[in-house]
Amino acid sequence: MTTARRVAVLGGVRIPFCKNNTAYFDLGNLGMSIKTLGALVEKFNLQGEQLGEVAMGAVLKHSSDWNLGREATLSSGLSPLTPGITLQRACGTSLDTVITIANKIALGQIEAGIGGGSDTTSDVPIAVNPKLRRRLLNLNMAKTFGQRVGAALKGFSFGEFKPEFPGVAEPRTGKSMGEHCELMAKQWQIPRKDQDQLAYESHQKAAAAYERGFFKDLVTPFRGLERDNILRPDTTLEKLATLKPAFDKTSGQGTLTAGNSTNLTDGASAALLASEDWARAHGLEPLAYFVDAQVAAVDFVHGEGLLMAPAWAVAQLLKRNHLTLQDFDFYEIHEAFAAQVLCTLKAWESAEFCRTRLGLEAPLGVIDRSKLNVVGSSLAMGHPFAATGARIVATAAKLLKEKGSGRALISVCTAGGMGVTAILER
Image (cartoon, rainbow, N blue to C red; front, side):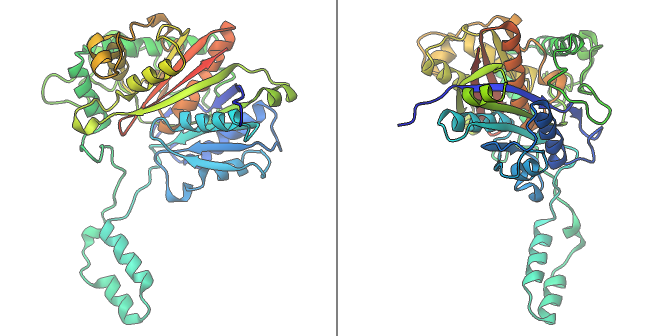
């Protein structure tokens, strides 16, 4: 029987996150992943090192990115004997890749590995029309000249040249993530001013963290940028209040805007994890330890809030680890939308929700807001879907190292009605 080992988080690296169609408009997931992995290799002097696994992922990716994890590894400076795997769970992707690496280390299957992810909404995969795709496949199968002519011309219309762009709506509801979150905001009665306040605080906290040098070893300069180009230190509550609703534009009740929702973002991130023995042998100090993780899902098709799954995941994670919601020094909750964060917090405070939906005898309760996203989060930095989780892991680990002790709760909502959560401690 294998006994679980402690898993050390040694640190992480990311490139500055950028608004789509700006600095990285011509880079795909592979290019961003190579740059980020290469920076991590350089930071920890891993040139030529054979690691147990590199797990990477992307949400919007071309068919040529099918082996993204391995291809990025081969160009990273690591030994070519290092395996690579490609994973995907929407916005939770790189938290899942970190969990995958952590689990393998805990079980003794590997000694060290990297979890990360990248995403681009600038270089999106554009598909050909289904009818044209079928026509091209038939043409490829044709064996005679007559068959080829028939496959190419029979029933052809110029409308077949219309390309297909990646969908932004949930396939089962036809609603975008923002539209679903608007429903959540109305259900939980989250005011617009509270959403704008959270967004404002995210920008202020991130700007202050950059100014004091917190991100200096976490963000590697790239293409002339040293910080995220979404960050707006000069934003004000007055400016945020002038923005029009972005998703519910007709009812007069819309509260989600471009200011309190995350921008479409390009970027990549990665985190290094290892056993204590490996870290010691390489002269690397653990910043924190990866304790446990939990994934949950909700039935959003039949009325549950699309982005509410972290409420369940955290409750299950706390129960298994005999912890309360207040037993944390830092709360790193992904800000897909300000409303999502506020809905989740309100759900944990609700005795009725915790009793009827989570099966608890008492509410999880209130958190200390001064411990929430203390160096900013996705509203200020951006959200390249598959890169957010590893960014948060590296951030939380460094916060714990700075404090010298403590515990951090990580929570990420994802498309498809899922949530991924984790605990780090030092």
